[in-house]
Image (cartoon, rainbow, N blue to C red; front, side, top):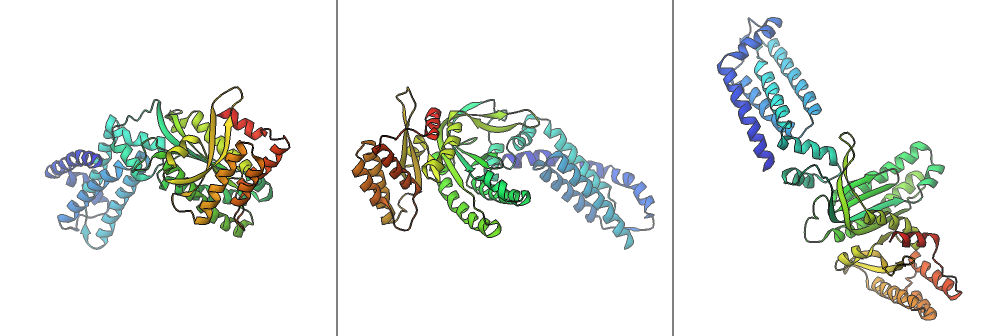
Length: 422
């Protein structure tokens, strides 16, 4: 609606000026040099409605396209359209008719001028500023909501309750060493394209997309759409992303005989959201301990044998819609605060009876492990095993039980680092 209002505000005055110029005979005078140049004095004029329709089409089209384009794009479009008008006039002259291009070129010029003036206003500069900050990192419908909304576009900084998803390729160094540079880049670009396109399509904001890592935010800059909260959306995106990347791995295996070792960390909480950077390189981003902890979770996945590792608030908010299981309980040295980490498994009520039983036994084994009941914990974990299905998180806990029985269950360097990040 907002877009339509601005469109009418610009196109109506443009059409009025074009009409007044036509009534004043300005087009005949302006087109006279061109008519002399192509020796069109002896040519018959085209039907009166032809230049009128062309002028109307160009005026309406120029303003509509300009509202959705940069000034550079609009300049190129206007120049090409003007050349097409001149070309159409030349073609018409070959068939004994004269088509005056002056009215069409005037429509292009007035439409371009109207947009340039409009872009200097507060309302007109809103979309270009948002496009510079967000680019193609938001789904088009969400971007239009930003443009049509009343949220200030300077984004000086505010706290947002949101969820962050970080997906990292852990074996990117190995891939770089064994693949030719061109193959490595092709593989990584395929991964980045598949993952980022999917995450943007499901409503995330693509905050970071580097050679081996992707960071996506749910719940900022706008609250999550629909009934599920931002944590549930992030959890759903993570679970579905695993399926997509497993499928992608089959393609990578076929083309390069290599697979991506990808891991996902999801965390929720308060984070600072703002436009960081200058006028040329600035963009909207999020920052804070919650964001940094999501990166640590992604890095810690390999140690625990998980594809997805979630922080406690994410699991709490998404537990009504997603199945999960506990992975570790962290406590920073000298602090009483303890943080539970979880692994998301599947949407609620979609696990098979066998996998539900496995999940429950795994949960029971974790509780027994924390109660230091080693033999009972081993039995529970053994019962959680599903024949023929690898479970590295289960293997991790069985190893921990054996170390604990020997009195060697000291935190690993990775666990200590993760605990310090709590």
